[in-house]
Length: 82
Image (tube, rainbow, N blue to C red; front, side, top):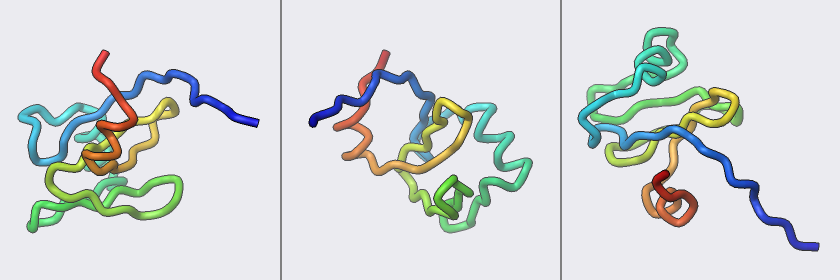
């Protein structure tokens, strides 16, 4: 059988690229679920464990409020702006 992913609207921004950091990301930094590093990276506590986001990666807020990083090429192949 074949399946198609249901259309889902997510929130995202490019880490260290976009000028505005969303409130939900700032909240995640405040509650220590995201750790910022001096080298311009961050670690994000995800449902799958701790993941690294580099400058330019997208940080996605999923449908249940979960955060995770995504490389730009994967993001652009998977998502489109609404």
